[in-house]
Length: 316
Image 1 (spheres, rainbow, N blue to C red):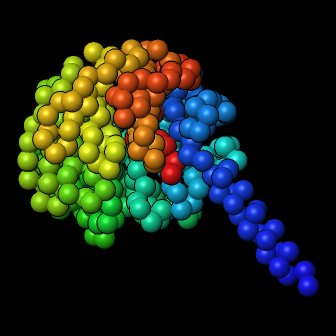
Image 2 (image 1 turned 120 degrees about the horizontal axis):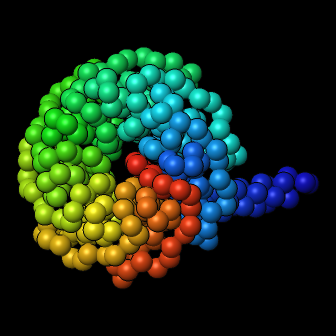
């Protein structure tokens, strides 16, 4: 006789847990060795997590409910529990880890070593090293394809992007792009890859499978990172030296707007709902929130010193 009541209670609890699982933005503050956690529903910092080693890169493992934070001066990365918002583990890699990514199944973690010109692969179950892949000089931004077949790596000093086969864990292709590629993004179908080229002030557009160069788009001064929004119809690019974000129509590859944000914008990520884009401003120690409907900054959130947030830093 109590079963219907128990079922109803269970459904209510499930709905409550779902409602509480709102997306968080994890912003690395490199100069004060912290990570600011922003509740994106209320657009406020709700927690500050201590991570030593000059935290820079961010990757979200949705399956494991973990956040990986690269620590260039710590020679590895920290593992944050995305629910408890505490550091669970410190993993040593060696060298200077910067770019960090995770595969779509949540099974493998990839860490780019700036000085060793390699990507180290870790098992996400036990954090043991499983492989080291030699890539181009000074690997930085990384991202996996939606079908989990490829890992793309921006080789900054080599002016190239490497495509790594995730089954064989070797390089399938390497393509030259603009000068000093850094942040990269890929669309939801895996058809187009975009890279911000810091020294040539442009974005290269590549075919996600063949790696053929499709186009080059001029943007602002020293573009750092890129993200896609509104069902991949918009590409947003942070321009470090201009204090702006360029907005590109991905159908026409033409500029739609230039948005003033904070000083020295670096990391940029899109909210899962597609309405908001978050921009970490290095010199202003804050985050600008852009409304993708109006293409205007609608909020500024104070974070920590040297907000960088390099990578995909918003949990689904």
